[in-house]
Length: 80
Image 1: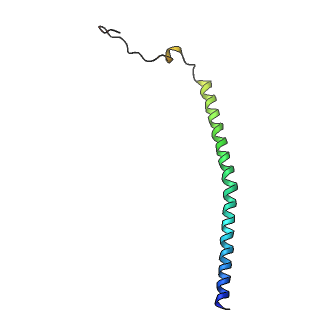
Image 2: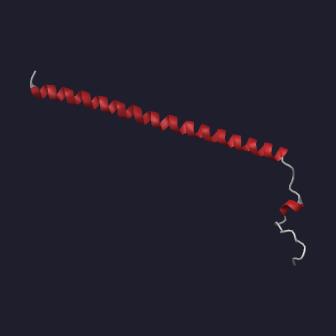
């Protein structure tokens, strides 16, 4: 075989291999990642809703006294 024929075969083989790896990678990245990310988002939203429901169920309602700003108690001899 001539050298130019060997070089052509090596170049063709490398091009086919690189094209195959590129195509495989692009297909895997485009399908799996988006579905997996969407599943994780759905799980996080469900977890937040469950936590909010649990907090609403078990936390007591706010009292009017809890909503007032803090006032320093007046000590003997001080003016308010």
